[in-house]
Image (tube, rainbow, N blue to C red; front, side, top):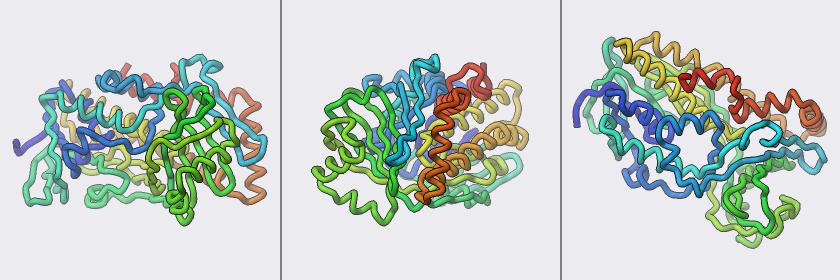
Length: 404
């Protein structure tokens, strides 16, 4: 392996690999460093998570040459979304056919996206991937940075990009503080079949004491997402399949008919993170290392894809002008373009979670008013739809992010 690279990416997850894909055919020499094994990256296992891609994200994946590597038989269209509040009649719904778009979003298994991203990177001559390796620290020098590995070796590079999860160790090492929000909740996900059609409709039910979501998959199958308090999660995980099936039928009020678990129950503790800055000297954060979202708005992957695309576009521009790809001015522009939206999304999402998971009587009345008002006021619904799908032609960041 060579000792000098133009860019070193720490983390071979979706954000790191998508940025690497963005650098294909640029002539830039890129090194991706991943702690996991090669098998874990090349052949990711089913983890229960389904990614709801926005139109903007789909466009980026197509541009990267990644979308064509995804098994299209695993892609499900999200035609409608409904939000319910407990046992009240309050409802907020969104339909693609009333918004002039094919779908609100595109549901893809997480492992499919990871596999497609790896396959694209593996095709590239200018991308090197090393696995079973970890970065200990980054030593900044004015003209470059030295990436220090746990085994004592080092590599010089013009730019270091951290994409090593919301619990990024290297973010802390370079001195970037972050705000962390522990929701004290656990998300339990599994695949279920049902006798009635989901009609390509996503459901979000803010029941009292839990949040229940359904994401429509191919056929009469769905990804069911149950969010409960941490101290109640083990009891759900320990349920027999018969008891779990009965609970889901009861919680969905029998609207999907007979429900049967067909996949393993996976669980994920919910912790949100937002870095106070996305940059340091010759250093940038992307993906969950920059902002790790609560999954209620399904925007974590989309924000990560958007962020890497902004940074990649600025680097490509700098290359055409023979400028330093790790300069402070370039990194400042990246942060300015990306951090405002992530703050709005992060704190806005946390506000939604706080409003819809608080069972105090006064708060229940407030959220019912919010749902009823939004449902009955078309301009509000249009704005929410445009923001969540990133589908409108006049969406403020679309042309800039896609470089059109």
